[in-house]
Length: 218
Ligand SMILES: C[S@@+](CC[C@H](N)C(=O)[O-])C[C@H]1O[C@@H](n2cnc3c(N)ncnc32)[C@H](O)[C@@H]1O
Image (spheres, rainbow, N blue to C red):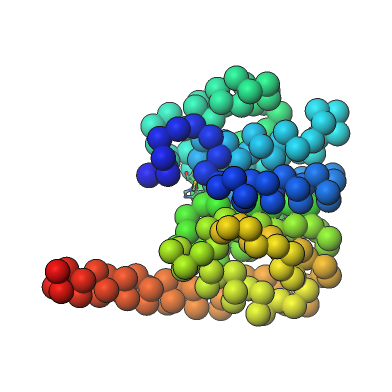
């Protein structure tokens, strides 16, 4: 379910400011990607960080089943805020499937925001997109916080394995990472994904045991 009931970014104010500061400072000109767009609120804020003439290409990957009529609602939201929806490359698909096509097409990105499903195994899958991130490019993960431990675990494991990526900032639950060199080993390989599915299952089990115990104690 979407957080809150109003249309707009699902980012807290300080997360949004951090994201806007980074985009304005970095002036990245290559493709920008958002995985998971919700109402398109953060998408609009990112687009508005750029002048219309020098705006980079934006791609959105989302199955568009977060709430009824999501795709049209996102497009209407952009239009009513002065952005022509056809200027955004919407891919109505799960990140897992869309990635295969993007990799086959040898796409490259300067900026990637991961904000889809927050379970460990899904974030690990989303991290495969970093294979397409240019050196010097920025990767952001939203909901990097204890409440959504899957995101934290996936990101921490990724940073531990790839020392060519380093943390740039953490504002609220927005983690900002830079890729500062080419990777020596492939990002989010099949072993990482296998590890992530086992850990995801373990986290789910732990959560359900905790819930049962708390029900018994109250
Ligand atoms: C938390 S919302 C994104 C909020 C948005 N980034 C913002 O800040 O306003 C999560 C989004 O992820 C999308 N989603 C769910 N499963 C997905 C998947 N497998 N791949 C990509 N996106 C997915 C949902 O449809 C939803 O739009």
